[in-house]
Image 1 (cartoon, rainbow, N blue to C red):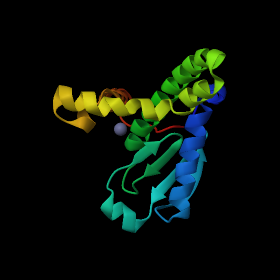
Image 2: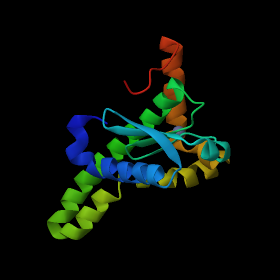
Image 3: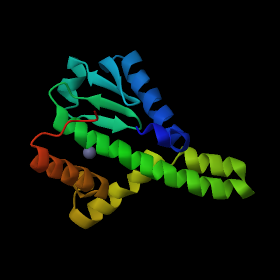
Length: 158
Ligand SMILES: [Zn+2]
């Protein structure tokens, strides 16, 4: 997470950490660490067998233990996307708050990752695949491929 954006992206930070801490508490993941404000955990073996993906929600990365820097880079793109949408939510929420502060706060709090959800519907309609057709996944895969071609190995979120 970019520290300069945190005043605008606080919901992304808090929601991600909440889910990440829940995953630790409920025994889905282990080995927590923090990189640039992002809580990173790794799936426990029992969960890694069932969920073969790395997953990012807000400022939390739940990493599959077999995945490395390339996946971490891909997931970091999603955090930037959440930040962008959370900033937009803060701006729109700020305008709405002039008239109704509760509605403005709700708009801000539920922007970010929530606003990527419609991409799965449009991705499915456009490409017949909700995941690979979503514009945020297409962008993250493309950015990771560009970085890999340029440097040979993306470096994650360092
Ligand atoms: Zn992705």
